[in-house]
Image (cartoon, rainbow, N blue to C red):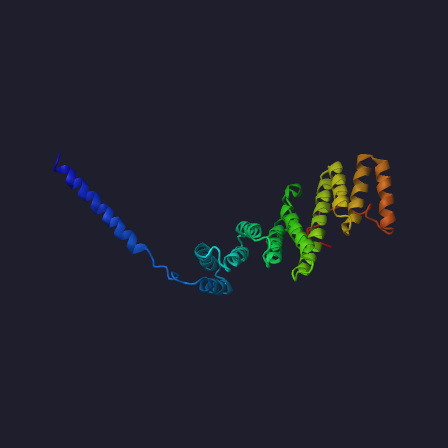
Length: 267
């Protein structure tokens, strides 16, 4: 027994040494060791310009880890958010933006961070506005569009003089029109399926939330036709008076209700 134990210990030691040598052979030297924060940032921006967003972020992560209190650290967070946005990683982009805003509430680029947040969710909103004719429209979720609108609105309210506010305002107008169209289209969807009360309620929701859009006329027409089908003559008549007062030449209450395949266009 005393002869077997040393052999077992020696074998274990040899296995350990072999594993250690193997791992050492696989380790690649870090060429960035000794780089200054400025050098790391410059190289990260170079990778970004070449659309190598993953490589850029790896450099930015090293910068932030090695120089957490330097002048490039907060900018590195913002650049990482941009890289995630361009690399179509919206969840990571939003997480990076929120971290930047929380940690840098007075940063000179705060307006840009808020604008970037709007852009990320603006792109995400295209999913609910895409034309998927066989999908149940009542199950589509305009959450991203609303989040994008809120981000742009916050930017314009907090930084009205920002160079990003003009574009944010234009995008807000697009989103309002798209969300109003969404409500109207879902109302039409319900109407075609005989859910007239649900259709009328969608029209009412459009009036409550998007009163200054062109879709109001269609919403009133939808409500009138829905109330007629439900036998609610008083509500139908009241709604028609509102329609003709605001749109004297309107025929929305007589038009055929359909689910236009181009419903998402913010007319």
